[in-house]
Length: 270
Ligand code: SF4
Ligand code: SF4
Image 1: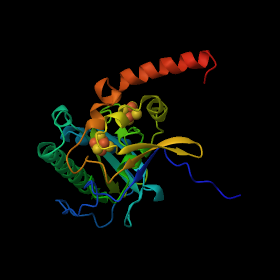
Image 2: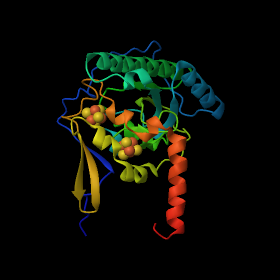
Image 3: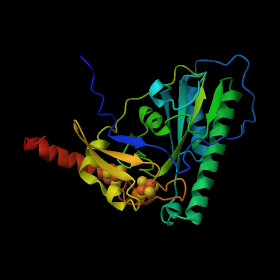
Image 4: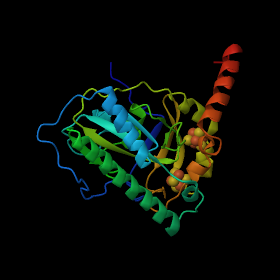
């Protein structure tokens, strides 16, 4: 039987992108060379030190995921496992209207995360592991999906990763590594699309109508029209500012949603 693929992820992207996100050519900022024979296994104790180091740099959350075909956008990669990193966007950036100032702040945040990503990559190399830093704007990997696979959060209707540490307000990068025994954890955030389906605030808040609801064979879905989005070209953050995960915080939203779900279940409406 032929498979019907009309329904994909809750969030899809239509590109033809003029939003300046991704596909950036970036310099190699590594200060430590790749080890000649990289180690492939890491102890829990080393991974704990790695996480402490990343947090000491200012990394908000960290997880581990495999490089599967679904997350590869361009290129070949010699390492098939990744350390995924996020860096929080500050309230000042989110409160600044789109244009030059917001764009400059947004660019600085990408530069900062790129720098931290190379520092984490160097730390791995110093300890005998192969490591390749992936810039947050490289366009080589679908970093949001990679972070979702790492259990850091889940993709919301606004197309952004939503997680406990930073809500929808973060940038994502990765370090590919020779370590093959990274502990990958199951996601605890897969309820988020169900919450999004009842919310839709980001769709209403978008000044460019870049988030568009469309009907599919199995319900409606939301597309991000990248050629309309000002996120990376003008530092637009309205879809973050409007999101309850930003204004109220992840735990508050989760707690209210779980109570609502329980009530609906008790009334037989789920
Ligand atoms: S609110 Fe701004 S950043 Fe979000 S989708 Fe719309 S244009 Fe893009
Ligand atoms: S504003 Fe609402 S629909 Fe949009 S990502 Fe946030 S929770 Fe989901």
